[in-house]
Image (cartoon, rainbow, N blue to C red; front, side, top):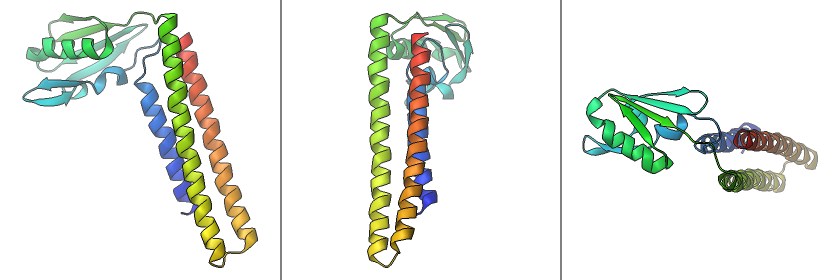
Length: 179
């Protein structure tokens, strides 16, 4: 595993966490909160994003404009069940007003976010360990001690940078929730 592969794996771990964090409701609405909710339409499970356009109206509203107005009730019900909120319908438009988070709910989200971040850190350590094993194997196969040390140092720098990114993602999401 060369340095590029290590960095790609680390970036993939950070991107996966970013995507996961976007599905967690904070004080702000986000299209990601509803776009992947599955709805039983046309005889199959379809995500909301395939059924209409999603827009955010600050400070706490998400609007879903369906292309096929016949599915409004079904989509609204699926969103209500997934987000535990009330969805108002108006023709082909579904309005979701997000209530403010309670302190208890904020604490639950904080625990969940910290857990997700820690799981990503564990994945990052796994990538580092795999890279170090390969370096050790290459060293046994004739790689000089200096070159091996240099490679391990490069891997550690990439891991440190990734951990810094994870920390800033965590802080950013917590700030979003507690504002």
